[in-house]
Image (cartoon, rainbow, N blue to C red; front, side, top):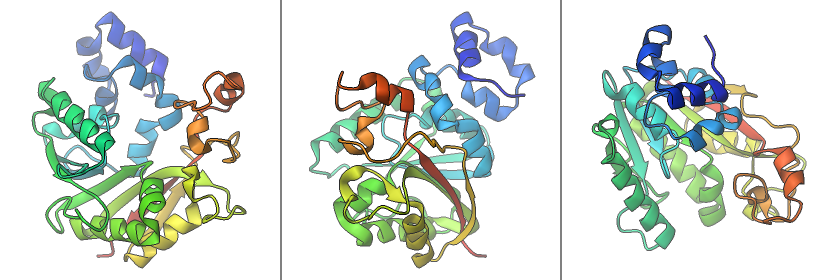
Length: 271
């Protein structure tokens, strides 16, 4: 049974979560659990969390590491989904970071974890390429997930940082474990280095970095694709919603495009 974001919002607002449990599987329950905010649910049409997590083969009894969970968009789904049988590591920004945005984000995330018992078993670790790479015990994770983060590591640390990130994920995964990567997709005909600060990354480049770290590419998906996005915008990917960095300038144009075109890649650590 499939449900769109409008149905989720109606269920939440009508207080029908308890009655709905018997009709849904575990992932459907997680998608409509009481910790999810209405604003986040509205973005399911762009982020396709159910299809994405199913593509990455995430199961409720697994050990899953999410890299840089930010404000907790996916934490709202993964924490309750994994709470009963699995284990959820949130590899957030390091406590010793000097970046004020990172400091504030980490603090807000920790406060959020205190807001609901659904988050009581979340294990916070730290990640930053090249400096904080122990995201979970070695060979312990069934799945490592990173959503729209790869471009940050490349923008700020170049290829060395990107490859370091993949090596960290490789170390944490069990042999046979899965790495799921979603990021803003740069068209292959554009120059990656010349557009380094655009927030977009070529899919071929992401695959190359993963292969250099030892991963095997298992599959790619168009789940999060958006053919309306050219990836060439005045303020990079942040021109598009939800950021809309140009404010009211051409706002309707960018709202019509929607959120970015994204690649969705599934890698596996060889057994």
